[in-house]
Image: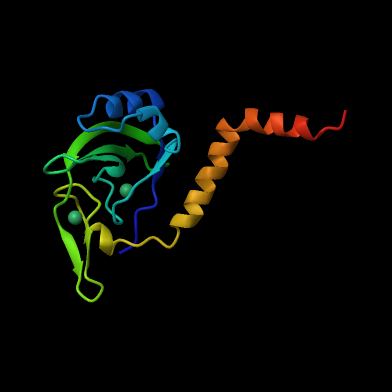
Length: 154
Ligand SMILES: [Zn+2]
Ligand SMILES: [Zn+2]
C-alpha cells in the first residue's frame, strides 16, 4: 500500500512543549526539532475521517511510547485540527527469516491501515526534497545572505 502524502508545518512552540515534557523524551528537545519544521503523515493511504499522523519521538519505556502529531485537513489541504499525543507503539514486528532480522512496526498501537513495513512511498524522496527547499526559503535566508557577502571581492 502507498503512504499517505499529507505533510504539514509543525507548530514549533507547541512541539517543544510536548516533547520537552514527555517522559523519556530527548535530552535536547529543541535540537531534535530543528529538522522537523515540516512533518509527513506516515500512515498508509486513509480516508478523511482518520487523522494524519507524524511520528516525533519514541521513548525507551516498557512498552515503548511515541510522541505523535495528529492532524486533520480541509478539502483544500489546510490544517483544521491538530494535537500532540503520547501513544503506545504498535507491538507487531516482522521477522525476516532469511536475513534473520526483526523489523518493528513504526506506527502507534491500534493504528488504521497496514503496518509500516507494508507501507511504501515512492514519492517520499520528492516530498523530502520539496520540504527541504521550502524550509531553506523560510528559515535559511539569513545564512544565504551571509554567504553571498562572503563572495564579494573587496
Ligand atoms: Zn495521512
Ligand atoms: Zn503496526
